[in-house]
Amino acid sequence: MKDLVLIVDDVDINRILLANILEDEYDTIEAADGPETLDILFKQNIRPTAILLDIVMPGMDGFEVIREIKNNPETEKIPVLFITAAVDGESESRGLKSGAADYISKEFNADVVRTRLRNHISLARYQNELESLVEIKTAELTRTYDQMLEAFATLVEYRSLESGTHIKRTSMLSELMINRLMSDPKYRAYMADTDITPAKAHSIVRATSLHDIGKIGITDAILLKPGRLTEEEFEEMKKHTVIGGKIIDGMLETFGDSAGYLSYCREIAYYHHERWDGLGYPTGLSEKDIPFSARLLSIVDVYDALVNQRCYKPPFSHEEAMSIITESRGKQFDPVLVDVFVETADKFEKLEDSLKD
Image (tube, rainbow, N blue to C red; front, side):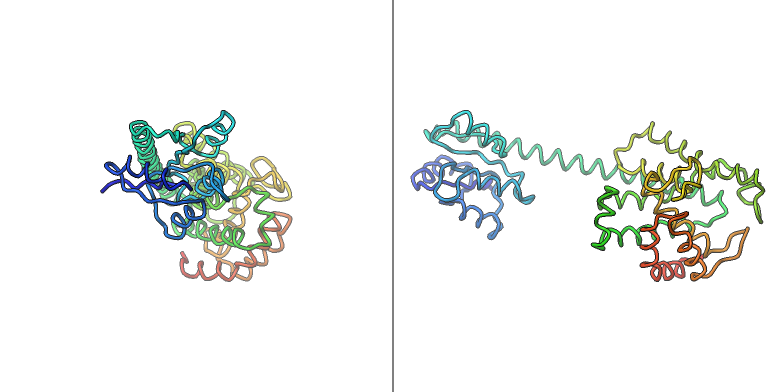
């Protein structure tokens, strides 16, 4: 099947000449002006392989048409070659900045027209194939990171006093809160301040699985001790944040962060025991100096720990856990995130009930 070329010119003879030049290699479709061009592309949803576009047309000129083409993700990658009687340096520069691939003179030389069109179609096809290959490789790399994170998280499960479902629950609970933040208009300014996009939000949720990776470096005598830790033992336990940060620093140094979320793994592992009032550890950061990802996970982590049994305590009720967290609003926890927690608390309770230890 031949490639399809859209020819746009308000002069009939120009469209006829170009169609005749291209007929052996391409199928062609024609438009006499800008509105007809946009109708073909966006109402009829016809996707040509390339577009030959006149600059000077009544009403809507070629610069306006190409702006519409390049501003639409469905058509932005279609190569557009301007056809013009003469082009000065300023117009050529403007056209190339608008996204035009090339210029073709209206003193049509059949070989030049076919060669330039063929070259730009080949180049566009190569670029699209290259982008697809990059997407495939990125997806493969992301899967590798996910598998690596799962392996480390499983290691924590076997060593830690928390069960495997703790990791799953904290991830799902974090997703509940961040989805609320992203969807509720009243948190728009808050989210803009944190610079969290949907893609970053997704990365944060995935990164929560390694929040306690540093517990690998804590001795079993402390990690699995029933009952309350001594002051010295607690100081030793607190080191799991620093150990976790160092482990992920090593991963960053070795693998980089092309998958986009190891940096969030580090933030969460290192800072999730910081407090809004600055009385947390390991660095004593306060308020918005604490990374958003760690502020979010800290609420989720505390809630899940409260409502589930541990070797050192019985489970609290959902209501008791809610009371403890809301009383710590503006003290241990980010006030806005506590408000979000309260708004999603019923979903927290249902999810916990479905995934109890």
